[in-house]
Length: 287
Image 1 (cartoon, rainbow, N blue to C red):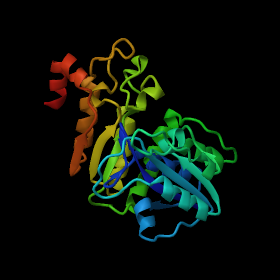
Image 2 (cartoon, one colour):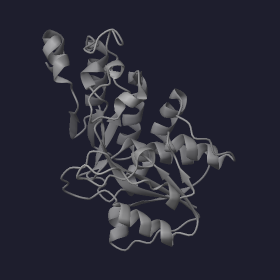
Image 3 (tube, helix red, strand yellow):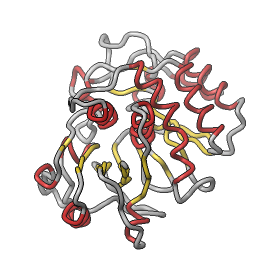
Image 4 (cartoon, rainbow, N blue to C red):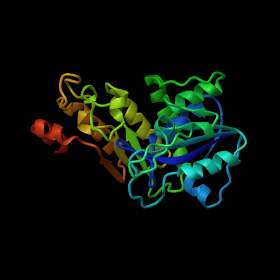
């Protein structure tokens, strides 16, 4: 059996610390289901309270790149990660930004590499790696758009196992990866420019994911999985750091989700320079 340990993520464009559940853990759950396997989900907070980690394969999702002050949980620490790895006797896989960049120590100190404590430290997408591993050949790669669409829906059910389900759980929704400012380096604190040119998800794909989450009983949503929401499918990508907002695409997305009558729907991450350069377009989105 596979145990998926959610050590929580906090990135400039993704929040997965309670009451939030990140899209990454849902994608991983979807990939496991797609491979025909079963999993058990446990959060680091449950482990702290004494819940045992079982199974033959342990997948640890971690990565507090921009840690802050939290209300309902704390991301896994490097010391906790070491202890868990020491005591687990099966195959250990580290995924998330902690695998890519290391565990943050704070105070301007360098990150700590956790790779030597696990069997696999996945630098790209943990969901894609796990899918390949379960099908016989471990390959560290990015997920395809087809897999992104499929796993986001298949993994929605994992929300039911989260300790904050159904309230006050908030599902973080990702609209794209990358950054419209990648060609100038973007913001110094953000990791999204490292993914280069934005790869946008289609509105229909995002809507299907939200529908699957609603069917699973999730009622609160945050569209925060992007470097700038007003740059979703923007026009003039690569020509300017401030491409023109695609009002139609954004409104289609928001209106479609609103029709599902969520209790909470809010957005995060809008570049102020987009608003300043495209004031009228921005007003169209918010009115």
